Length: 51
Image (cartoon, rainbow, N blue to C red; front, side, top):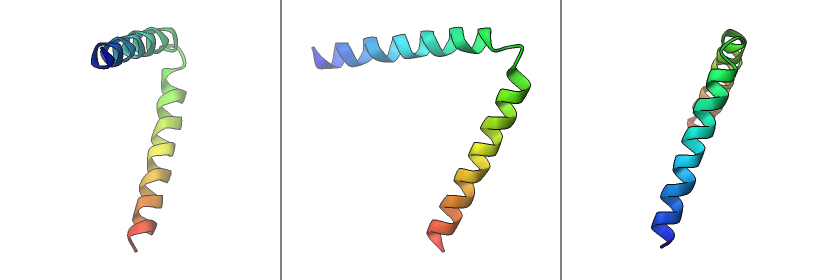
């Protein structure tokens, strides 16, 4: 039962994510830049954490 619920929530998240992605196609470039920056920051944090 819990497993089925988890799958359902996962599916909903995928659908919502896809819809919001299609809606933000116009702003895709800036969104991607922001995501890239966040990923870079995260990478830096991980590098610092390892040192």
